[in-house]
Amino acid sequence: MVLTGALALSFSNLPIITWVALSPVILIDDGGMSRGAYAWTQVPVFGGVIIASIIVARFIKDPTSPRFIWRTIPIQLTGLLVLLAGNIAWPHTWWWSVSGTSLYALGTGLLFPVLFRFALFSHSLPKGTVSATINIVALSFMAASVEVARWVYFQAGGRIAFHCLALIAGIVVIMLVSRLLKLRQQHLLQPA
Image (cartoon, rainbow, N blue to C red; front, side):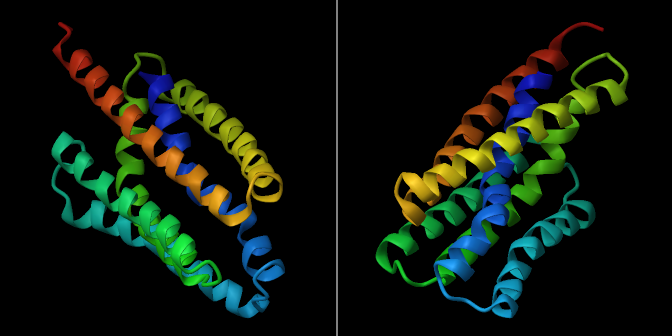
């Protein structure tokens, strides 16, 4: 369950991490945006994560319920579809990249603390050991995903291919969350 949780966390972060890494190239170098305007385009992306954290902390009574978890997925998918469809329909408008990523960031911000908690408490090892394992997997995945995304953007099709990578990651997140919830249910049903 720890590995499934770590992979779910990693794939859910992929669209945001790769956006942070490549958005200067996409918006400033290729899009002609000023550095000041670029900085402002990042506010809604990070704001989505912050707002989600506030929502989970203040308003959600049981964020670990499968019902809440499955309600975050449509927010993420909507963000990814806005991201991709907007860029296909209006390829020179940066607004779609920023708004889609921001909406995705909101959904991920709602889901991330729950996934981390599931992964952290899924094993009897000391929590520091489990947390270190999760973070090693996540950080290794992030480094690799940035390099893959960079290659996809520069060598395999530009912005549309880059955003397709985000959509693929979102679909993988759904599969991993489904698996994680099944594993958690089995873990809860085991006698102590």
